[in-house]
Amino acid sequence: MLKIEPRGYESEFWKYFSPVMALLLTGATAGLIFALMGRPPGLTVYTFLVTPLINTGGFEALVVKAAPLIMMGVGLSLAYKANVWNIGTDGQFTIGAICGGGVALALPDAPALVVFPLVLLAGMIGGALNGGLVAWLRIKFNANEILTSLMFAYISQYLLVYLVTGPWRDPMGFGFPQTAMFSDEALAPKLVENTNVHLGILLAPLIAVALWFMLDKSLLGFQFRVLGQATRAAKFAGFSENKLVWIAMLISGGLAGLAGVFEVTGTLGQLTTNISPGYGYTAIIVAFL
Image (cartoon, rainbow, N blue to C red; front, side, top):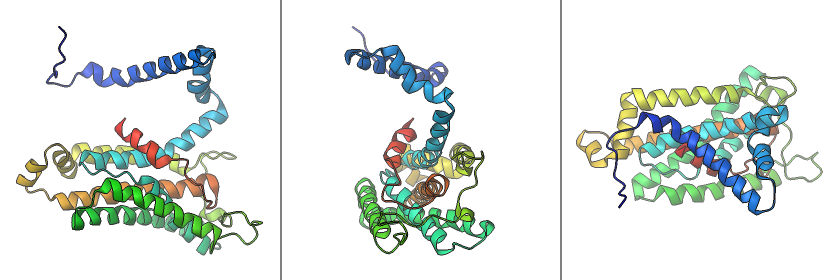
């Protein structure tokens, strides 16, 4: 009889081959589903998984969408390592966009060297405050952060709808639920002219590397990992669980807010009722990957 037992050590082969195997199984499963639907499996899988990588417009869209997912995903992975279950990054993304967008609208004539850093800072602070409120509720009232962070996501969305249909609505927008366009100085610098490839795409992998270094090479990262793997051991070692919860939520919320700012300044150029196609929930999957 077959029996599954833990290996007891990390396999170097499966460490690198398991993502490849996951991709192969994804393609095979997708092909099977399309075949059952009466579609040519090879062509459909190629269209979905390969064409975006070799088509100029598709590749541009891919990297633009990847930037916020990377920022949010690495922040979430940091929190999850410490057993802090932030599920509301979509709300922190939205709050960051609102705060950054509010600064852009308030300073339409400011130079780029002034307004754009303020827009980024406001977005990060907005997302971090949202995450910090979740941390405070957990520490003060032992409120489950899964529920509170998720509920704040709905509050953030309704706040956005209120602003773009009410006090921030563009008076020249023919009644559409949107703000005025941001000034050119408040927009994210483009890395490639006449495209949406913006500065955030370059910044996202740098953030990922910085957080990996912090998590893997620093004392703070060691504390996160110990807290996530053995809470009692972390307490015996003198690590403050409350402090680590605060830091994890502030970082993950701040990065989600930064992603929201780059989405509205790098691709949309204004606030609308729908600025996130579900980035926050997709980022949860990215974090686990």
